[in-house]
Image (cartoon, rainbow, N blue to C red; front, side, top):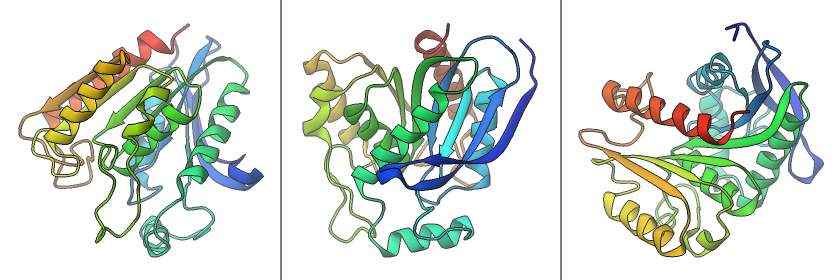
Amino acid sequence: MSDALRAETVTITGHNDDEIEAYLARPLDAAPFGGVVVIHHMPGYDEATKEMVRKFAAHGYAALCPNLYSRVAPGASPDDAAAAARAQGGVPDEQVVGDVNGAATYLRALEGANGKIGVIGHCSGGRQTFLSAVSLQIDAAVDCYGAAVVYGTPKDFPITMPALLDRAPNLSAPLLGLFGAEDKFPTPEEVKVLDEELTKLGKEHEFHSYEGAGHAFFSVDRPSYRVEAAVDGWEKIFAFYGKHLAG
């Protein structure tokens, strides 16, 4: 497979038929490829997230990150857009699902697409990945330290995210969960509750927790970055997607 890829900003149709901005990277090799919807973290549609989108393309997937903050702050910097989104209480769940569905539809329509879709997200994007996997029919989901899945956000939190645990029976895809053992949001106890619930329901999943890692250990541009955990996490992500999205 060639390592040639193309990356660009595109417009997709999201929730309520709104046109929103998205960042696309895709391999230029002719081989059939799976698609990955990358859900950005709470700090927004930033350079670090776009680097992840390109990383997926370099590994043979078409990847697309919808800008979930397009409506509240079009054209704003990631920091300003994230602040505007927090000021209005975050992005409504139904809007997230509509935007992710629009991104998946866009990926499936690309020439060379094999029709299989994975979703991945970090931080709030991890929770929104779980939300997408219990709301849409997808093929593989990766939750990287997604908070508020089990208990929802506390009352003093800047955005409102209700718990999703009662929707676990609707999980449509195998789930890979990657967590920091030192994280406080979600805590190891929350991860354990989710693991036990999915096991009870017979849902295919695998969870990994990394000692010495807290929240945002994948973020190369932040002090929270933990190289050993991140490298191993990426290996697990590509093995997981290779199993469920290839061909």
